[in-house]
Image (cartoon, rainbow, N blue to C red):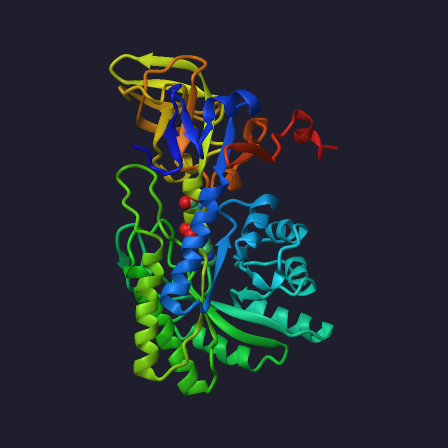
Length: 432
Ligand code: LLP
């Protein structure tokens, strides 16, 4: 009935998340409101971790890609679940470090890290810096040399596997701003160079083939390509690459059209590829890292809005306006993403109205979705949009000087604020 398994309907006919009444949440904390089920987040972490135990003898680390949803509390949860994290900016790194996150379990990504960001990574002994280009390699080597440090680096590789939602392409990924291309020999030259850098230790290779991927073929192909590259490095340069990071991208259910795989399937299929490769080619099995973001946070979250005006345009469409929109969920305006929505205070009623859910920004494209089937609604009803836990809060903005909503975690039938709602004062805090 619902796209996420943590959603239900109580005897008042209200939608619940993690057994907490969403209508009460809206009353207590106001709307728009992001609500996330902490237990489901933890369950996702465990299923990825268990998959490494089960299919790869525990020889790996799951790093939550925190660009999906970043705030102090999520890093505390990740640390508690013995996860690593992927950060892509000084801001994410700072937030994690503020919670005392174990820096040895951090992968630092980014195609244009600033000097300050690299310095921060060195100051805090970040476990793995994922180097994206030659300039960064030189800069990091020089910084380490001057400061008497040796950094652990990985290279971001473009494996030539471009995964789309339902299939993948084996060529043509040279045109990406991220990483070193394999096909052109660029990646191999970079490895040679890295091996000659005295202040750097090339511990591994990384690739990330896409996002919201709903099958395993692309991951298997990427694993094969990366293993062949590891073998080439061993044979031609005599160097052993100890870590292989296969990135994230595991798909989730946004609407009933999506049919995601159980999370353990990804590790099951890539482990098979790697184990076979290592046996057949006499290569030492690498330590595996994976970086799920959306699949950890996405299904665990919903957004609650209050419905305002309703505009029926005969023979065209019905607009239902909400008190949020592209500022808290820019994924429709960016990607025409589809979501499942329902009227939280009428969750036991049948969905009979097809509407366009419109945000409150001065922008015609500010929609949450078109052709959305919901219960008949009126002003004051609470609209719940499902599976908004990833890339909603983290991509939110203050366009039109709207305040960012609060984020509430629910757990064991209780709720708590983990990010406060912005105030009007917050909006002018940095204005001079
Ligand atoms: N690792 C790397 C290096 C990545 O670039 C990404 C996502 C991930 C891991 C996590 O991917 P996930 O498991 O979340 O699919 N804003 C877009 C998604 C952009 C993803 C960018 N990189 C969206 O809202 O769909």
